[in-house]
Amino acid sequence: MSELKKLAAFACGEAYIRNGQKIGVGSGSTVKYFVEFLKERYQSGKLKDIVCIPTSFMTRKWLLDANLPVSTLEQHYQLDIDVDGADEVDAKLNLIKGGGGCLTQEKIVQSCAKKFIVIADDKKKSKQLGENYKNIPIEVVPAAYVPVKKWIEELLGLFFAW
Ligand SMILES: O=C[C@H](O)[C@H](O)[C@H](O)COP(=O)(O)O
Image (cartoon, rainbow, N blue to C red; front, side, top):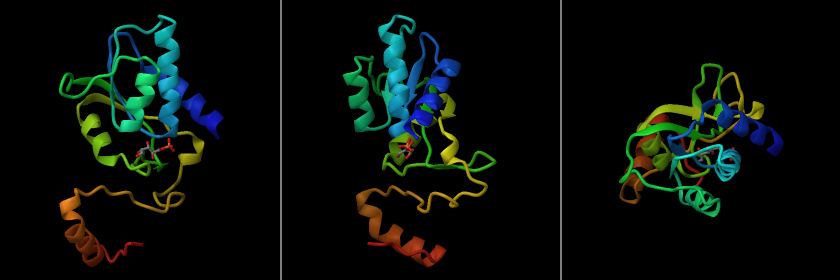
């Protein structure tokens, strides 16, 4: 499984990453391999003048540990590309995302990018969303969690496990 994620992440890097890009870097175990790709190319000098904007605390740490140039949307809010993973992908390329808990920051970074690329290996594919990944991640500002919970229960007839 990790081998598939690595292959997909490196193929994505080869196809879409170029010198001089400002790159949004998503979250999750697949993206960790994408960070590996960036590290390899950057250290070897094949990839130059990039700036990486992470979508989570963990990704920021991976980028810093890899000695890649890390920045924020305060410095760079116009990105060339954003690369992220997904929890499930249907035939029309609709996605479930955010299972790792980074949903909001991922969306903010993605909204600043000209191009959005999702890396997903074969295991993430389904005919209809929900076939494989049974949860829909949501992220709510703390002050709103009770009303949001009520609305979801009342409007959608769904119930929370907590
Ligand atoms: O919040 C997490 C992100 O949306 C991830 O991209 C998603 O959960 C996929 O993660 P993984 O690559 O670990 O399967």
